[in-house]
Length: 170
Ligand code: ATP
Ligand code: MG
Image 1 (cartoon, rainbow, N blue to C red):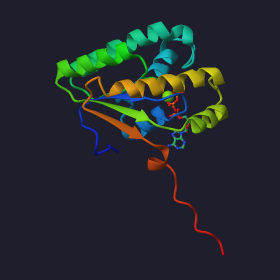
Image 2 (cartoon, protein in one colour):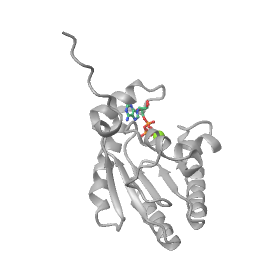
Image 3 (cartoon, rainbow, N blue to C red):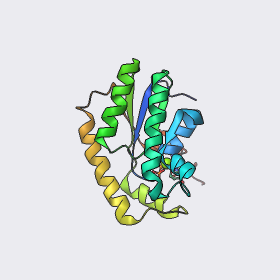
Image 4 (cartoon, rainbow, N blue to C red):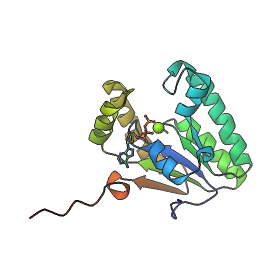
């Protein structure tokens, strides 16, 4: 199911803290091969998705895959924290060279929701790490406007997955 507001093919860069719902959002809208995830790549070249020692190798692969896909004008969803400005710049340049539209999707999930989802996960990110992620996402959102993206979309949790309240029983 595609979001009609998103161009296709396109570069789609996700921005959001751990637990904000990036991977879930991407999985519900894109084919698995269209999503390039740093966690998935850490799982391929390291002991698992959270093996931070594998980050350097995983990000080298991520850059390679993004470049190869965009070079073929294939839709590419980059599923990372999204807070590294130099990487965003590079991905945007690759999309421009390929003639593809480039958009950012910010998972604007409230900090409290990220925290409670994170706490419920099997491999929770330490609270102080999540705090620093939330701050870097805030800084990233402020920077996006001047970076030249074709669009910056904000996804709020109430907009996609909250079921309507059950009717009151009387
Ligand atoms: P990470 O950066 O750690 O990979 P993430 O941003 O990819 O996190 P997800 O793995 O997509 O986050 O989601 C985190 C948790 O929140 C999961 O348990 C998921 O089931 C739940 N979740 C994600 N999106 C929603 C939603 N729209 N409504 C309810 N629960 C959600
Ligand atoms: Mg994820």
